[in-house]
Image (cartoon, rainbow, N blue to C red; front, top):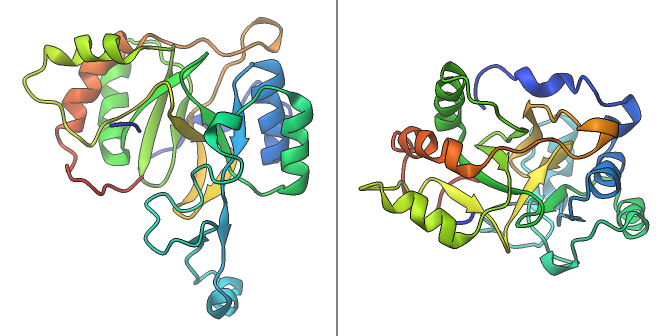
Length: 236
């Protein structure tokens, strides 16, 4: 259990400069250097040779750079370097994306930021409910298939206690704590473009955005996730 449809309200990036939002490299440097979020490049996507002609017409499906035809998260997972290499060192981050400027930006979760995600359709429902309740949210990432809410760090023990009070927890929810990761904007994976459903609002002096505690939102996510399909192979 580790790891939008509708209107994209968060794509305004109101407090970000054009340079910060222009490329994966610029965004990765902001996450690492200013916000102290550990990042690393994802494996990215490659176009099979027999599909390159279709790509020029926008008709090809991108394959994962790991070359596995059955990859569950095409383009959107660590490969080389591995997840443990995630860093806040701007020199290493700059070097990675200079070598691979189109690589997706992966956030290694656990410290100082974690996340919880659910299918995109359930994410619409959850965000509407949280808005109606007046809950203050942090950044929310939207992919074509999932919605990820960034939250303050939590332990698996804390999460277990929060979930224990529920009779049933849908497996369509995924929890990105220690040892996990999420894809951050502006990335493109095999599933499509990754953007902000709720754009990050940098803290004082351009510091890291404020993050809510998972305890404030998890009950709503469990309820919303109950409407999403379960299964061992879910779209990421």
